[in-house]
Length: 627
Ligand code: CA
Image (cartoon, rainbow, N blue to C red; front, side, top):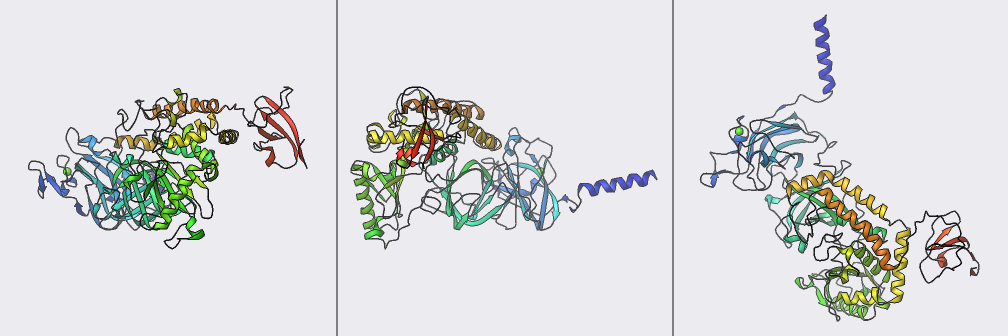
């Protein structure tokens, strides 16, 4: 009786653990992998350190690859298997245990692994003479499985084990190394992108936090200017067909992977884009932090971002054709960039006031002579008569984002566009904030300067400083408009509390990924790019940004001559005898306290409270205006 009860409970326990799963066993198959090296001769080997030695059950033998990076060893299982567990043991040598950190396990159903999905990434040291194991959380069945060594270690692995069961599986569970979406790219023949001109064929796979997967053919190349000089390269990916990516608004072929190498918080661009939205820029590029794998190697934390280009949900202007050479059709749309690197391209001009301009759309390979002359002439006209042809709203909002973030680079590169049948030139979107938020030794500390950062050592191209001066320093109506925009943003919620909370939410989101990123790029205690100071840890780097925000908002208020009073402050009418000066910014509230803008002329008839500094006055707008 006792024995029967015991047996029954064992059976129930077993069923309870795996109600539907088939039995998992250690899998065997044909051993596959990259060529091995004979260390004694430095040549390729078929007898020592071979792939077989990662599966011979001995901790004393190991596989080492001939090439230093992107090398791997694995199994052809013959049929698809769902992998439920992987095991590994490092090479028995001094640096063996650390050489498995950021090693990646993958599964695929194509022999060339171009459709591979990750199974697991190792994030800690191994133990010599022992197996380490991890469960695998991926429900897809794979015929081919492999282990890819981290960068620059010749794979070097003593033992590998794969466990699982036969079956095609399903896509209900996919693995991501952290809480962030994953971008995993596999190139044709394992070729690594090496410049900005050559697009390398690839399968681009993006796994969302909701478990969604997009896996489509496309290509990858490097991108960027200054940011391309760092060992962690920025990339441009391009799908063969337009794709909806994660929760991005645009359907598009081209997307960027921003490397954020010099920005050790990995969040400066994301934070600046929030400033752009708070400043009501008509278009702010989509950006999402992701982890990136390239051919199975972990490349770090990146920002998956819109390619800044003409698109209904990006720079929304008419796309020109080579037939648009006269009349209204010739008037746009044009997308261009005041650009320090303009002379490196082919479609550019120097304006009459000495500013280099790259024409981005129409593209250099399709733009006609008529179109090029048209935009060049129109830009020159705008420079002379900016009062008439420059859209102040976008120009000033762009300026305010640059100054609030303390961006040294604001006038190093400025995107602008012109629509068809509209003579106005608009500014935007904002872009490139790696040197903002106190991250540039040439302007550090920005908050100690009495003047704007663009006048205090900031980089600008051509004669942009004098162009900007004419507007934000010397022009009274422009300065009045700027104060109104600032007031609108401040009253609309651009506050220290909000920005600190937003920064904190970004840094929380990035915790797991930053850890992997700085394992891959151990530069936390090294000055890179224009880093002014070493803060020593990720959290201390974020704290530097937080401190800057706290000081900078007040700095901007003072600089602009603005007195911030929270919209939740009392709006009870005051008895201060001074009258409202309607030539200075003021805020308007309904009698119930609801904020309703900063311009009485825009409001319908009714009773309002107008607030200016400490003064609050009840006013009535009647049929014939203010009473
Ligand atoms: Ca071995």
